[in-house]
Length: 153
Ligand code: FES
Image (cartoon, rainbow, N blue to C red):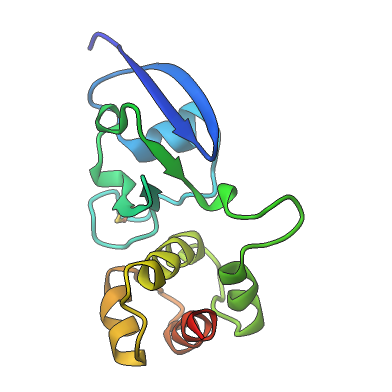
């Protein structure tokens, strides 16, 4: 495939890249940009491990072609902390033990932030519903809900 130019902002940094049209945003982030925080679980929209924000909206990066993010702002888990200071959602996941193995955690945190931002964190049920696309094999769900509810307060 012939490569296409792609101007994209990732975590506040502008990149002028060239990508194959079939490259997913997930592979672009992990391989071309060497940001491994965003995880590849299923690679077909079933697990939520690859969740990032594009222009502030929650997106499954494995189902998104990189070229569709032309001119957009992408935020990954690496872009949340302010220097040494973690994002409140990252702090809350630590405080409430919102993970065990940690593989799903970047996606859970990106979804948790979107859950509050989009106004779906008004009850535990609402949080559970919004977060239902983010699978945790370790079953840390109760603590994930607690963490999101606490940040929402
Ligand atoms: Fe994208 Fe599983 S890797 S949803």
